[in-house]
Length: 454
Ligand code: PM9
Image (tube, rainbow, N blue to C red; front, side, top):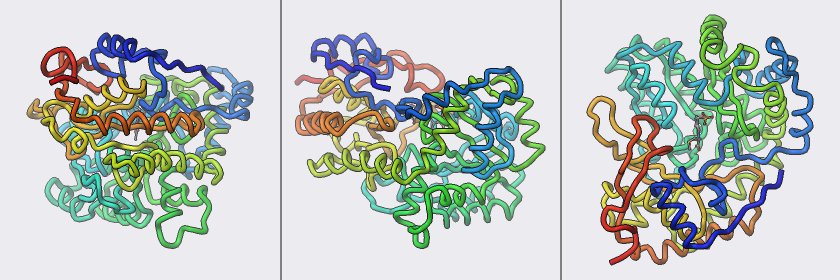
């Protein structure tokens, strides 16, 4: 599908951003020229996906489209029990409610905001057990999504296996900048957890992108197909939670996929309460058809090679111009190190959010802050969390933008970087919602009426 986009004037963008409380998320999309807020649900569907929509069986119960969807997930991800949900966070809610009790502990390879929010809402404490290299924007470690097994062992020893309902893994790791986990590390992590009777659930939103990096970087996998590698990534785990809005090339949807029959029955019971019947989970039949077709397309080498190459193209352009970005370049995004670009601003002045505002003002390009604002407050202390990484994330929708759009993005960011000294003020909250605050928060410059000025 082709959509028209509009380049607004600088004055127009200034007015739009002010009325959006300096939060690009609150802009109308018509005021955005190139929208890199997210790669979630923003994919362009193929001709085959659009025609699959026409086959949607909209029966309330037992729709044929559910069985097509179930088969596609079983074939490509390898789990027996497939339970549809309306999108990823629907699955996170169900899995957290099934397994988490107050006072329990969840180790994981870095947090994702909606995943951790559901874990905390159900009374768990999240423990980041990712390798230290993931917290260093510059390092070239090929698998920054790996688990540090010593950190995981320490959490198990300190809290006891009975207090750990599951290990929460992601492939690739979004908040680290789209960094992959290796199959060897994932397998060792599962072995360690399973030895203590702890199950492991994998966030597969971008597992196909992870499979691509395994093929490129992990010894022994270069000659295997992406489809095979995807199955190998899922094989050691006990189940998956999926936002089909990413890798699956769809605009909406998701699933929980499990091996354990009893847990699957429990999850289906909650899906009935929170999502929809267990054979549609909040999706239309046509959505399930589009996802099934999207899964088949997502594992083709032709698709994934082009997708990752486009992200790399943007990353290399910024790198060449000296813009500090996260290395290695990730699967779905290029992340700009806001603490390096705006090193003259304190963390309390929210450099990631400020950089997001500056890039929008400069070229109508919308990204999202992945730093202090996204990290939220510690539920125990109420204090702001200051993660080691503070980025402006530019996430690329799949199959949407051309190289000249990407050049516009690169030119915009390079201009902002060259004139970074003109950004003399950061932002401060004027409204702060209790959960996932980056979506709806409003801000104002820390002084005066602009982030620019003397
Ligand atoms: N991720 C993203 O842009 C969309 C919302 S945040 C701007 O990165 C992972 C790894 C995700 C994710 C969403 C979800 C939630 C779970 N896991 O958005 O509810 O990246 O489908 O999925 C976003 P839903």
